[in-house]
Image (cartoon, rainbow, N blue to C red; front, top):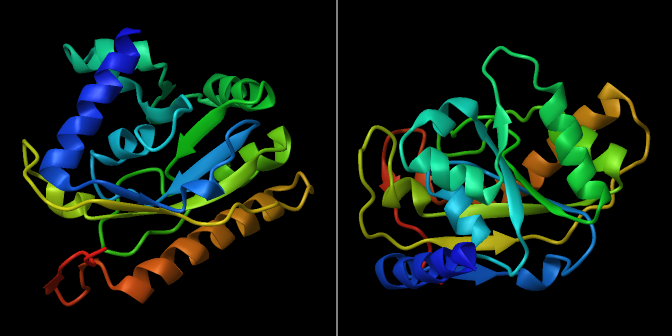
Length: 215
């Protein structure tokens, strides 16, 4: 009940201050295992994706965040999947697989960190492994505008438009090999980058800035 109330308040806030819009929600299965794989320009990204559907989306996050007062408590209530820098994260991966095999939803940022340039960076194969070993479909997702709403190296967010576009889900090849995991991850990135280039959103490589598209 408390989580639902927080989600509702966050949604109102994001609609008022960020004009939050979702497109392609019909591409997100209402039930069954699904992996939402998105670019990651800002701290805001997990918050934005968690508001998209009525499903409880579990995210990977640095374990160090659990030590931050208030934020750590909230993340534990949300049920984040802790990732340890340089540590053994296999137990966390196995937990994510159990969630998916039970028909749950996982949110993942295949880069493994926030994007430095405006385009999504090189992906890690984890998204492919989760999909193959759980049988989940992958829904690629493009997040626009959060880089402007909460830029890197700023303490607090400020008003800026945010748009989230869910692309059609992928059916992944079933071969459980690292090579196939990597191919799937690259395919996810290719789809996301193609949309980013089509809209030309974010700070361009030259350092010039472009506005988010006016949806």
